[in-house]
Amino acid sequence: MNDAREAMLGRIRQGLANNRAFLEREALAAPHTPPPFVHPAGDDDLAERFAAELRKLAAHAHLCADHDAARAVLCDILVAAEVRRTLSWALPAIELPGLADDLMRIGVERHDVSIAPTAAERTAHLHELEPATACISGVDALIAESATIVLLSGRGRPRLASLLAPCYIAIARRDQIVRGLGQAIARLQQHAAPDLFADHSSLTFITGPSRTADIEMTLALGVHGPRDVHVIIYG
Image (cartoon, rainbow, N blue to C red; front, side, top):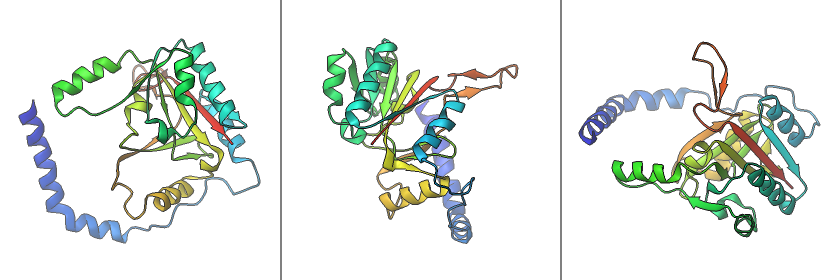
């Protein structure tokens, strides 16, 4: 399995090397101006807009006055779902003071997600994490027009903390909400300049629960990721 994997990756690397000059010319020729907003900019409350759009997607929005209220809502969600184990970003990356004490108080065991070096160890680690029924992360931006969560993955910010468990909870501040995709990209470029992926492995956009309709054209939620999505916004 490892030999086949390395052979496949080697072909990809060779293909990229053969086409690097062409790809760089195309990238430089492409326009780099952020796209316009889907809707005209107005005076509407972006948090309320985000919440309204998120609820249309069969997900849950919680607007809180401060981080104490946000922690109370988070605990209520975990208790109602009878969560005993959760995966999460590293606590400093979530930026919710007192979260560790709250999880301990309600009897929820928190697991950091690390990447094991070998395939066998990764498989064993995933089996160990599978019983977790909730995952918690911070965010890098929220896009109000489409109710999209934007996440940069990297050290202390694992992708599995938004993908593996059936219930996903994102914690955000009001000042992380932007109106459209262009603003979100500009925000990421500003905060992670000059190289967005120097310290981050991927950029993920999450819009509502996982959904698919490729089996008998019947819409199903939660097939390829979390079925229940909560976004807690405070500030």
